[in-house]
Amino acid sequence: KEDEIPKDYNPLELKLIISMSIATSIDALIVGLGLGLFSTSIILTCSIIAFVTFLAAMIGMLIGKKTGAKFGRKMETVGGIILILIGLKILIEHLITHYY
Image (tube, rainbow, N blue to C red):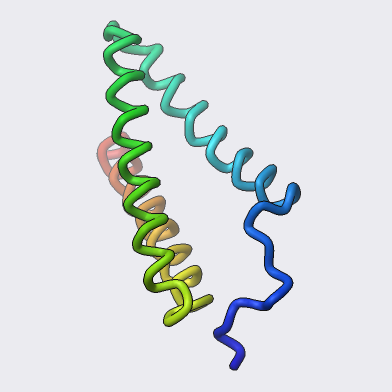
């Protein structure tokens, strides 16, 4: 089947880890810039973000482990589409509030 994950797929491959790290770092950079504009408690904010990120990552890994074999690459596509839609929603909201 084309939906199955190839046997030589290694989620711990250095190239994959680096690309995921860059994507996560860009997100963190934008959040950091945004938080820098407000006067907030950095320690409290970072602690909450770290806890929520840890919790979401663990839940995602557990769900992925249980459903990965069944849904395979289809879920990667669905996840990518959801992220694109979220980005478009945020972009449209900002464009509407700044221009109208």
